[in-house]
Image 1 (spheres, one colour):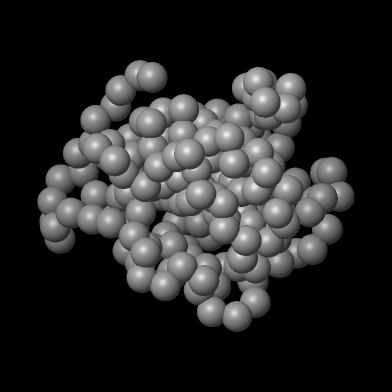
Image 2: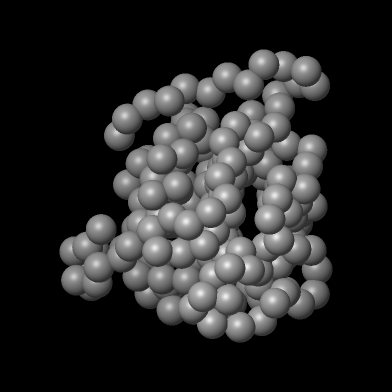
Length: 188
């Protein structure tokens, strides 16, 4: 994706692109956690969602000004409490970011029927490429399945994808306990 406003080419995560259309529509809000330069915030806005992009670095704030459907909020997600209070979202995107204490908040912040789309690095990424260097930023095999409980897993993969070693998941907060997982797959 190349943004017309900046000419910058942004690499969209194929996992996010694949499952973003599963997020309920009708004015729904999507949270982009640790949004960085906002590649997935922009994608969600193009899909018609209202977006809250959160990051401690304000690099994306200026770019978001050109998109009325994107609100940028500067927040350090790793210090202090959960900065979003009781706000709820139909979709949450977490890509290449890991802070384990956030997961209970992410699960709670999903509306019933909401979708969590997450992809981040596993330990082989650091072993092969030396990054991320901090072991706190690597997932152990199968760990993401534990972190998203009690969400219902719609899709899960662990391994090498696009030149990186990752674990990724699409999980849904059930509308009612025991309800069948149903969400529309649509093309945009």
